[in-house]
Image 1: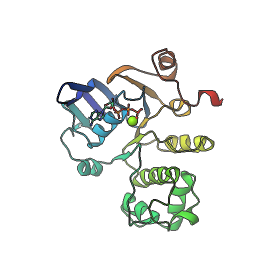
Image 2: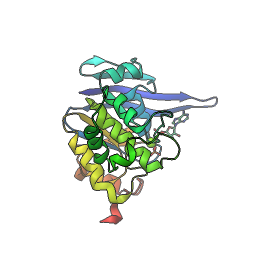
Image 3: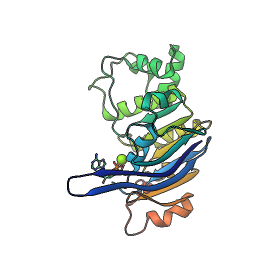
Image 4: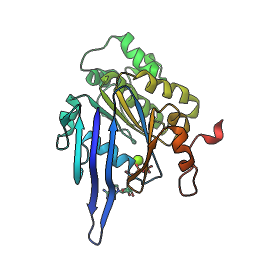
Length: 238
Ligand SMILES: Nc1ncnc2c1ncn2[C@@H]1O[C@H](COP(=O)(O)OP(=O)(O)OP(=O)(O)O)[C@@H](O)[C@H]1O
Ligand SMILES: [Mg+2]
C-alpha cells in the first residue's frame, strides 16, 4: 500500500513560485488499478516521478507498506519493488532486448519466458529478443519493450506514465490485458485514454496540481466532459 500525505511540489523561479502539486492526499491499495487523469500540465507526470523518487517533493510524506520513503533514492525504492515506465521511454544503449529483460527480472530467463513477456506486449519474441536497444527501434516498439520490462520485474507497485503513447489503437485491448494481468500488485497508470479509464478500480482526477476528485469512472466522467477539461481520448472510436 502506498500512502501520500500532504504532498506539495514547488519550483521557485526568479520572478515567481510555481506550485506544481498542492496538498496531495491519496492512498493506493494493493491488487488495484488506479488511473491518474487530468488536463495537460495538471501535474500527473510530476506526481508519478515523485512516487518513484525521480523528483523530491517540497513538503509532505510518502509511505510504502508503512515505511516512510519520502527521502529514499530511486535505487532503494526499486529494491522495495517499485517500478516505473516513462512517458518517453529511455533507451539502454549497448544492451539487447533479452539482456534488458534479464536485468529487469534479476535472473536469466528461458527463451519461453522471454517469449511470454514479449508476446504479452504484442511483439514477436523471435524477431526481438536479440535486437539491440538503439534508435532503430520505433517509438511504439520501445514503449512495448519498456512495458515488457515492467512485466519482467514483477514489482509490488507499478507506475506507468501514459503507456498508450505511441501504441496503435488496434493494440488497446492487449494493453488493457497487461494491466489486468498484474492483479497482485498495485498499479498506477497515468492516462487520458477512455479504454484505460474503464479498467480502473479508482480514478484520480488532477487539475492545476490539485486532486479535484477521486472516484469511479461514473463519478469522474461528468467532470471530464466539462467545458474546462480535456476531451477524453478514444471517445470517438466506439
Ligand atoms: N522543471 C520544471 N520547471 C518548470 N515547470 C515545470 C517543471 N517540470 C514541470 N513543470 C510544469 O509543471 C506542470 C505539470 O507538469 P507535468 O509534466 O507533471 O504535467 P502532466 O499532467 O504530466 O501533463 P501531460 O498530460 O502533458 O503529460 C506543467 O505546467 C509543467 O510545465
Ligand atoms: Mg505527463
